[in-house]
Length: 543
Picture 1 (cartoon, helix red, strand yellow):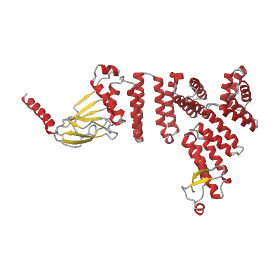
Picture 2 (tube, rainbow, N blue to C red; picture 1 turned 180 degrees about the vertical axis):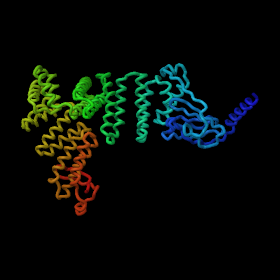
Picture 3 (cartoon, helix red, strand yellow; picture 1 turned 90 degrees about the horizontal axis):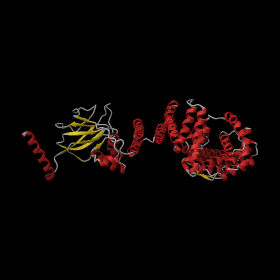
Picture 4 (tube, rainbow, N blue to C red; picture 1 turned 90 degrees about the vertical axis):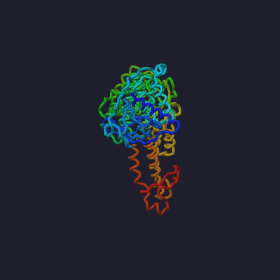
């Protein structure tokens, strides 16, 4: 008893001396925290008895550094799911590791708190000190964007108080996305898995399964396909299969409330899985029908919603490029429907739309539907159908008139972009390259993420090379300008990368030679103005 009393007096004396005469001698402790598997542990809050300064949060290397008092008795490690302490009395080393690889003493205590399912309001009202302090610390770090320091208090909230606030999950996903952006390739997989876990736990405690599954699938595909060019077809298929399951469930649960991005991704995933043999054509058709109805319902409610407009253009594009539905399938299927409802506008519009997207303009059904629809309701869509019809009948002048009518009356910018591009292709056949570029540029201005119009411009530049410039070398520089367009195409639209690369390879071989450039005093990397109708500058490349 006397010894304990004497010890207490010493502690009090040291405390008083610390206030009046300065702190006791301090030292710097460094070390590494390891997980049970022996790997460095990230996101661990490291603090110590009688330390100065703030706790340390470990990064991916598990390392920490603390300034502690010479009389400190232990170091505390707060993991995602537990808290452990390590005795350091008598340990004079400046390097103290903790975990599987550590040589220091074993932890003296492990505590795991029970999960508390009260809401934030209930926890605050009850005065739960740990929650209030942890939430306050987290908010301070999170507000200033210090996600590294915010991780440990967030983990306590996420693990012990999972029902306190839905914001835990929103903020946690943001923190882990930030970590992914700074991580090496090897570190990204477990971080993405953690985000998937956060979505599952959010569904468990806050419901809204349809919305969360859609967001979960969107992030999953975003990060998994970031390195798609390094993946095999089989690996891509497995990624899309996983994403497809969540996307389809999201759309089924939300109906007209499904997000535009989810609807688009579902169609893209469906198209790819059809190409790999995982899904059949009727499934592609069913997904398309279901999602396009949802998109149209949202556009009917909010006509200027750019997200759903963009989704509609992307869904149609994915459907057309899937190869799942052909004219051989569509024409017989719709022939009977047309015979029964030849004067029904809804039926005519649906048939006309599907036949247009598969370019079934050679069929008699296409001609019958196009003419009937334009007679009953001369809209941009029916004018577009008439343009294709007269193009097939080799009446190009009349076809162009209908294309222009479709462009002038269409309100949806993505559909208008499609009309402009198709008209540019028609005029390309007439070699009126200046007009081709005008319509192609209109298409680009309406849909900035579409690469096809850039490729068309590149082709007309290449086709004009022999007619531009005063020398063979100047004519060859036109190919540099053509390649500029192909590079822009794949920069804005990854879907045209293969086609753009093919064109780049074809026309790069016609770049000016080094000897010719030397004699005309033109250097690689210099800016050259191409004249004629093109009237545009490019960077000179030599072969």
